[in-house]
Image 1 (cartoon, rainbow, N blue to C red):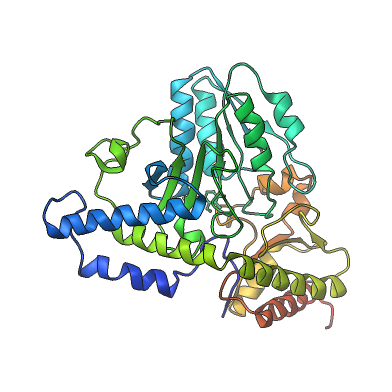
Image 2 (tube, rainbow, N blue to C red; image 1 turned 90 degrees about the horizontal axis):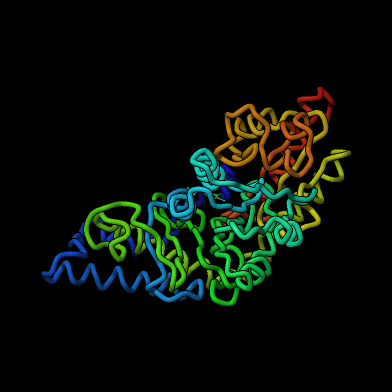
Amino acid sequence: MIYADNAASTRLSEHALQKMLPFLRKHYGNPSSLHTPGTFAHTTLQTARQDIADAIGADPSEIFFTSGASESNSWVIQAFASANPDGHIITSSIEHASVLNACHAAQQAGARITYLPVDADGRVSIEHLQNALTPQTKLVSIMTANNEIGTIQPVAHMAEMLHAHHIPFHTDAVQAVGHIPVDVRSAHFDFLSASAHKFHGPKGIGFVYIKKGFTLPPIIFGGKQEYGLRGGTENLPGIVAMAAALHEAVYGLSTESQRLANLVHATWQKLQKSIPDIRFNAQNAPRLPGLLSLTFPSTNGSALANLLNLKDIYISTGSACHAGNTTPSHVLTAIGLPASLAQNTIRISYGRDNTLNDADDIADALIWAYHKIHHIPV
Ligand SMILES: Cc1ncc(COP(=O)(O)O)c(C=O)c1O
């Protein structure tokens, strides 16, 4: 089996699992309890908060645990929308559904939303952003890296420019944290969302960074957890595992990203030789090292992915949220692909477990599937 859909989710790392296990059976005290197991749980929680803060250059008081990035994104956007019902929010046209749908909801409630266009490689231009600003602009939310085509946005430049205009900046950094260097302080971010299952942590746990000086209204009413903003007993096993996974990912980041880039290069080199007119999306932009979005001439992406599935090779036709959906991806149409070509696209996202052999085998399998679909003898 070859799993190359790491942008959808990653395997829990052994290190994170070992850190997590004692908190499922042995240390099950509630961090709010005052007895010894409770205070141990509380200390562990705060250590994990510190470790996560250190990994992104934040202060622990700026880290708020959530159930994942959909919650983090929704929380930030809804908070600004409800505080400024007729305010203006700027985002991009290639954001994840959790950002786009939160913006659509704000729009229905009276807010004005600008969806910035992207170029053929998926880049948002700083000039477009600057031109879209108005005195009513209350928030800008632009993702650090795209989950379908891997484009990395110039978010630090955007945040710096917005800082000068005193406009808060949020970034959905789900695909970036643990994969490329992220430092909230030097990048001037005000809010950042992340999710553990994208960097070999468990599912259902993430965090939002909220810069000191900002506050959001509570997302869940309850006790004093998460500084009173998100009530409910903390998911301590998940939090401990997320901190361990993030530490591991950040520690090995530069070697791993070079290794992943080599896998992408190997697959692309082989495919390019055998399939004329194959297209590497976002090839000219700074990109996530392990992600390869490919558009095939006159070949349906689902048909290719299904044939690979039969060989126990797992890739995707786009983001996990689009799988099974017949409408063309909003990201691929935003970079200018007509619907017919958007349907001919697959996404390979390599991760820690993939090897150069996998990269070769995936290229071979795609070449085989392409020829099979077109009834061309190999
Ligand atoms: C860019 C991006 N944002 C947000 C999310 C949602 O994250 P979660 O699964 O933690 O809700 C994803 C996951 O697919 C993503 O890729």
